[in-house]
Image (cartoon, rainbow, N blue to C red; front, side, top):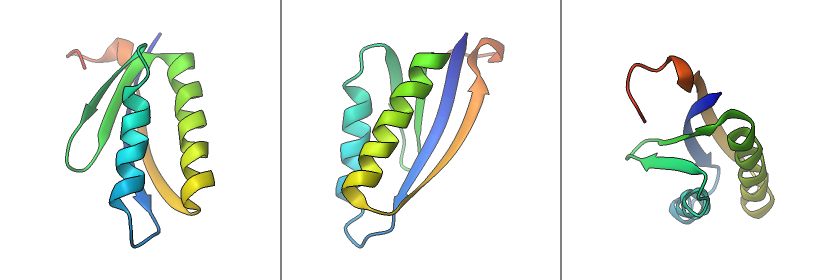
Length: 85
């Protein structure tokens, strides 16, 4: 089953650009997912379980490094999408 996740990260830190870019760069290092970044969010698509697992790893890594950060996520069943992401 395919998952599509839309993620926005909001570090509770005055220096917020670097942690966001580091998170996006780490997501882009995975070969088994597709990552599309816009000005306000990042869309990640891939196999459901492996994508959820890598998101958990990378969100935890961000929390450990940054401290407080808010992640706003939307998860969609990619199998039911009418267009490819």
